[in-house]
Image 1: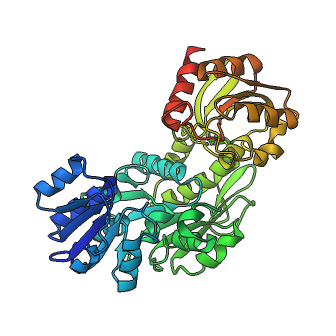
Image 2: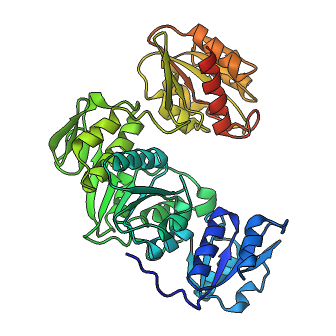
Image 3: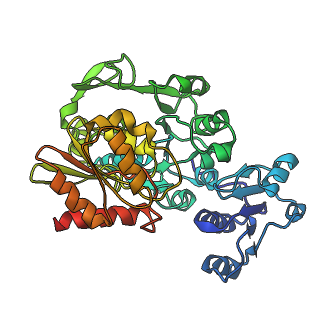
Amino acid sequence: MGKRIGFKGKKVLVLGLAKSGYAAAELLHSLEADVVVNDSSPDKGSEEAQALRSRGVSVICGGHPENILDEGFDIIVKNPGIPYHNPVIRQAVLKGIPVWTEIELSYLVSEAPIIAITGSNGKTTTTTLLYHILNIGGKKPLIAGNIGTVACTVAQHANPDEVIVMEVSSFQLAGTENFRPKISVWTNLYDAHLDYHGTKEEYALAKSKVAANQTEDDFFIYNADQLEMRPYIEKSAARKIPFSLQGKKAEGISADDEMIYWQGEPYMERAIIKLPGQHNLENILAATASAILMDCDKETIENVLSSFTGVRHRMQFVKELKGRTIYNDSKATNTLATKSALSSFQSPVVLIAGGLDRGHSFEELRPYMGRVKAVLALGETAGRLVDFAASCGVPYAVKVASMEEAVQEAFAASLEGDQIILSPACASWDQFPSFEQRGDAFIEAVMKL
């Protein structure tokens, strides 16, 4: 680790200012690279631009000049959100200039080993859970990437006795060349971000880069129940640790209805786990395998799993009230996420849903609506949701005007033993600036009950 070499005097173009661009430019400047930052937004005297200019970094705002590459750059570090069909990126690829994202830099400067977690769903829960286990286990974890501080900022200050737990997206992984985590985790693969990557195969290839540079000294934890991942898994030279929900397996980590197994031996009883849902059990297996490989003791792992109730706004346990269990799943901004939430419960569900109307269908939820006894529908999609619930035979479905009314109505419609869930299946922007504020409004209304 600690490969702090090779940037002195190198000419680097940082494309996109934002948080990651600013962090990358700052790091590269400190490593004595010759840095130019280019951002498409107009220069409105942003603090970041001013801070960089005060250190002698050139910042060009208000568009990407066509001839910008004529300056002869050695490397481009781009914001993960900038697509590869951007004209500057296209040109750079044709000229053979390496195009990186800042997680490549984080690997090149880190003194600490990295655990990198990716997947279409579940990466934030897995990252957060693993961080908690390592923290309580005294392993000095640092959290970085999509979930926390920009990875290269964390990496440049990390010590060899610490470990960076890094949530990484396909956008970030696409821009890697040498990135090599000590442990990589790939939770699952579903169709996503095809507007960015172009094809499902390009998306999967980007995800698979999490383990592409690993060797037999490293570990690769992956979902063995998804056969479509197999061709990508086989290409990695890392020691493979599969996880499976299909009963006891001889290798890796697996689970049946009663037990979690490690390398085919009973490891812990499932009854201690607090976090509900099959999809969360996948995340738990991935995080537990990582913790075992980091030499965390079983007692620490059990302690965390018996108390961890989820990431805020993602199937977050809020409270139990008069026999009803209440969950905040405000992060469920599409039907796939709400389907996961509904599939988590066998007992009757009172569902609060609805929000911004993007015209998408709710049909994906139909197989799970049998367990829903009432729907309180919010926002622009309220009318469509009430009609959909009625077509599914849900006994009670009504429109509500506010989150407070939704919570009061949900409580009135529920009985002891029921689950009350906010899982909107829609974005929040018709009524709330963000899903976080929507979730906070839900929690506030629950606390007032």
